[in-house]
Length: 348
Image 1 (cartoon, rainbow, N blue to C red):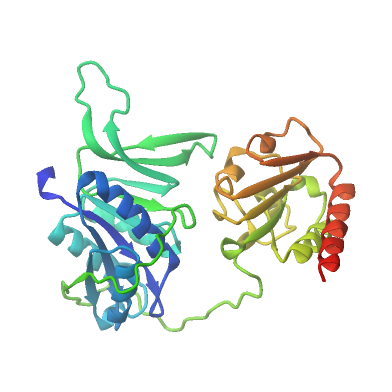
Image 2 (image 1 turned 135 degrees about the vertical axis):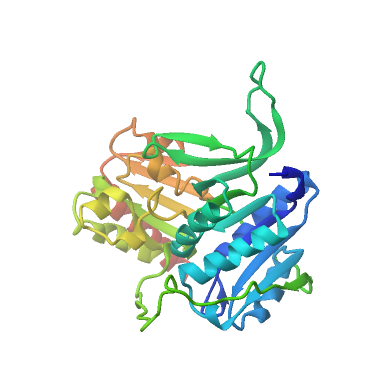
């Protein structure tokens, strides 16, 4: 493999039902950052059927070029045709870096494509940067420059690993939604559009979709919430979450939780924050009865303001909190809720 042939930072611009997924814009923001020290261009790979209109949005969020693979076989996501499309793009255009969102689709597509193009894949990354590898020079070993350093939780979240792929291209990673930040859109920005179609001949690996049944959620996506009131095992019971719901209502926020709460059956998985849940960036994050294990902190440490309430003064959550209150949440939370309601009433 001639590594010098591989140039540019590519992202897979996921779309569903003709709408660009937010993760595509987040990846473009990170791609712009990674491309700067490499003096490289940013390319978005858009795959679907009748989706050319989405190119404009990708340009406004940082794409210098959009490779459009548009074919009726790509109307709905299926592993085989989508993997064929993205693999063909990589083999034809030879990106140095290929980023895919760690969504349900990306976690299926990324590993399949990396195997086909014979490169490595670092999954579920929480940080990406350009640097030297090995990070610390080793006597007798070449320290390669301008490598993609991919960081992710490892060993159940008990440590953080930084991984590189120095001998193969592209350097591939899937990235957790909500971790990277999209740039402010540049209105009127344009990108070069390259239409590419490797041809699609259905075979026995093509799944036939008989019916699509969409679940209807009645709860707000916690990744979109500006205020989150999150509860852990220390809340005590499912019924006791009423205290947190009252506080969230007073603040105009949303309730979320830790993995221990989901495992106990008190709340649903879609409300879970953390390494195995969702990564959130609210303006205010209340961590109530949450110890602060690294798995949970990984999903909320980028919140603008973190308030922790816990009866254990040595709880790890206090090390990442901006404000900490040591005490019984059953007494503190109701008083806090009443104080907020009184303040709002006083302001009319």
